[in-house]
Length: 398
Image 1 (cartoon, helix red, strand yellow):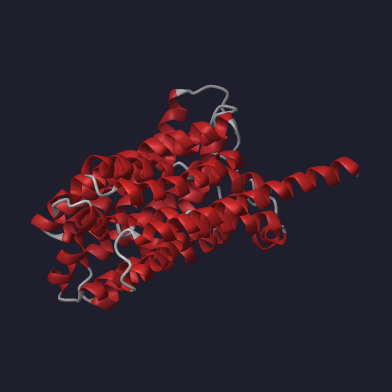
Image 2: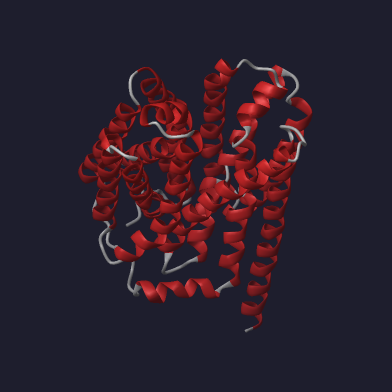
């Protein structure tokens, strides 16, 4: 189904996806804000509480292909409703879990629908969009992530700190339930494009171009995560901000992410997803080096927080469109796969970015690591451009 005009129903459909993205964004990022509160309330150590972040990421990586495979022949609308109900149920169970093993189990289960929702939602959004505006439609769905960082996570952190972290996850469950209802009421029925089995759709992995895109996502976008994983010590120890200012600083980063998300969608529609991704990765390299030089001054530190967030999130919609265009016949699997690789980038950026800090190189050292990761992604983009040119040349000679 392809819309030829931006009807009110289509707009409401995209808003329902945004609401789903909001609930998942809160699920993923809220834990960082309430970690100390959870540690005290549940009587576990900070590292043990931190494992709840890692187990969620593992759930995303496993769940992305698994959920798409299980639901490959089902109507996307029903699948999206089911995934949102999973977010609702498992966040609710997490909020009432009475011991650490149950917390780990329910947190893992809450991660399972993450990749599939964004993967399937991205394909659905592109089908609902007007011709030439597909990437912008995808960016509307991912706006839920940015709004979650601007509003949802600070609100959930406040509730968790002043009342109980359990109420915060109860709030997420309610939002997810509302998202499921919104999809049911506002989303038109769309037939599944899957005419091949899930096993046959795995043939997309035979193409080197797909592996290059996976490399771009897993390594290149890790540059942003090397930065944001250590933004707190960067801003407090280097820029000299009071720790109490971190909430405001994270809101600034969230606004940058929101601006970059919509910017990336528009650039991808105007130029191409690959061109946009290539330029943004190179921009990330430059931005991280500028951050190193300008973070010592508070006004420019705030400015670079906004800019770096914008450049980092600007890659989301172009990358989604890039992998969907590559994986004809298995778009939803490929789109969900990108969410798994994004979480791998999160883990890789945080791990590698922490190594130079542990070695005593200071809190600006993750930016060097991030620049290296982003530049590696840029090189993968150049290889992908060369591969596409070679394919075009071969087809012309055939």
